[in-house]
Image 1: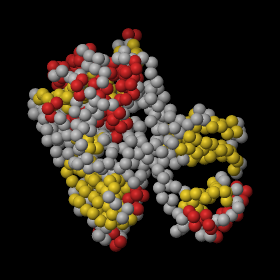
Image 2: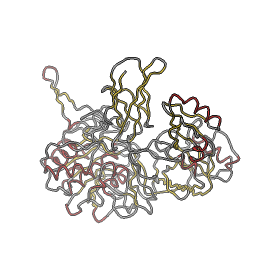
Image 3: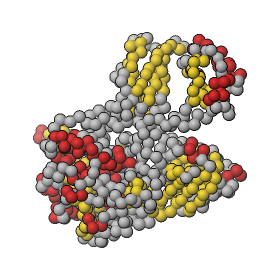
Image 4: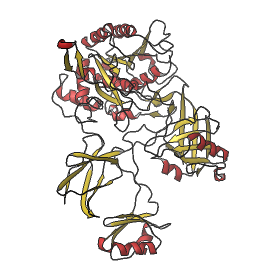
Amino acid sequence: MKASKFTTSIIALAVTAAFSAQAADDRYIIKVDESKKGLVKALAKKLGGELKVDGKGFIAASFAGKDLSQVKGLLNNPHIQMIEEDQRRVPLSVYSDTAGNPATTQLTPYAVVQSQADQVNFNAGAGMKVCVIDSGLDRSNQDFIWNNITGTNDSGTGNWDENGGPHGTHVAGTIGAADNGFGVVGMAPGVDMHIVKVFNEAGWGYSSDLAYAANICSGAGANIISMSLGGGGANSTEENAFKAFTDAGGLVVAAAGNDGNNVRSFPAGYSSVMMIGANDNNNAIADFSQFPSCTATSGKGKNATTVTDETICVEVTAGGVDTLSTYPAGMATSASMSADGVAFASSAMENSESVSGNTYNMGTAESTDSGANGMVCVIERGVISFHDKVNNCELSGGIGAVLYNNEPGMLYGTLGDTNATSIPAVGASQEDGAALLAANTVDINIGASDYGFMSGTSMATPAVSGIAALVWSNHNGCTGTEIRDALKSTAEDNGATGHDDYFGHGIVKAKAASDYLTANGCGGGVVTPPPVEGGDITADASGYKAKGKNKVDVTWSGAATASVDIIRNGSLRTTTANDGAYTDSFRTSGSFTYKVCDQGTSNCSTETTVNF
């Protein structure tokens, strides 16, 4: 497990693959006859406009305090073809947790939506049971159907329903947290679980413990074994125990590891065990997710043989970066934030307290500012440390601080071990920065919580275990191996086209797997993996010459990822921000085709051609 600061986020609105239109900031796009652009630019400047963009066939300019109708009235010129608002565009995450306070509202973690688990109903009468080999499941968290949960204590580890740290409780919540109106919802809500507590107080166990636990899981009637753990070196006793479980019709799922290298971890590296990697909410591979090769060599010298076996490397991935799930009571730190009464994403940084107040834009807060007195400071990340920003806010009389990111995504962080501040401070995303700056009031609450974040292939593993239970509950005539094959056959292809060492077959998809089994039966058949979920991308390219070079303006809409790949003549030209426009420049002549793709995927626009 790779843990982030244990915080619960009150996540903002679920996002779409399209751009978000916001206030125009008094900026307008003026489409003009290119040959008369100079006259229009001069007119705009004379009438108080400030030129922002000088594009082909258009300019963009700001007119302070003027609305669209006023600007149209000012620029009454026959060479102007159209005037429209210059809308903001911001990078968006592909998937997000839902908004709310888990103490009173049920949140759906992003991985549930990403994996399509919210599109499949769990069949509670199918007899599915997941055996979780970990650090125990703390009975203090009430987001479980406890009548459906049993457990076994391994020697020296203590009671299975008393935590040996939050890891096991977090894992179990991802698999089967109840659909009960509060907290979080698991992949297979309310699924029967058997908990085997194998970790001692130092947080580790042995391969013999796992072999013994596999027998316990079998005796408890489990269909699936889930292990968010691993280590170096194979062990035949351990390997045989998991092989026996798989041969008997079960499914064993284990974490690939969190060292970000190509080392094979065990038990995930055994052929009988399904190895799971981790991706984030933007469909990108986690930087910590291990990626061992599918090629293995046995024997020595002339007797050495090399084989390729996709069952000894990553087979699929699931959400494993900053995943929200259950904790033992009060062991996580919760941050909730709202602006003008609307819930926004937040992460707890420091100092438990609740405050409400008017907002004050403190910029990057590089010095004190008396305007912040009695206010909640809204601060942009950058230049100086988080601690110094919050400290300057407090020294200015500020009662709380919201630090928003200066790059796409949520801001996670602390104020350091030498924190000298006392006001509550939370992180926010770059995407929400403009809305927070525009808000009149902000409410912040930081306190203990039963729900928190963790990151790791340890978090992706229970996601796949829960998805397997969900799919299997609707196709309970299948074997574990057939469920495993269905999950791989229908995974969303990400990374390099086709099977690769990082994603394996891709991001697991519950509905696609269930539909596949409905159509093809447990034995399977030929299937086309689902396309990347990002919607249709449309793109256009226009060529022209400037300063002796060929120029191509590529424009697009409908891309889902924070960055996009620009493909020219079938090869990657560049990866650039998903802001809707890119200009290519070169000197060679010929015919050039362009298409725009979600980064690292095969979800692309149709090709468009320019000639020089």
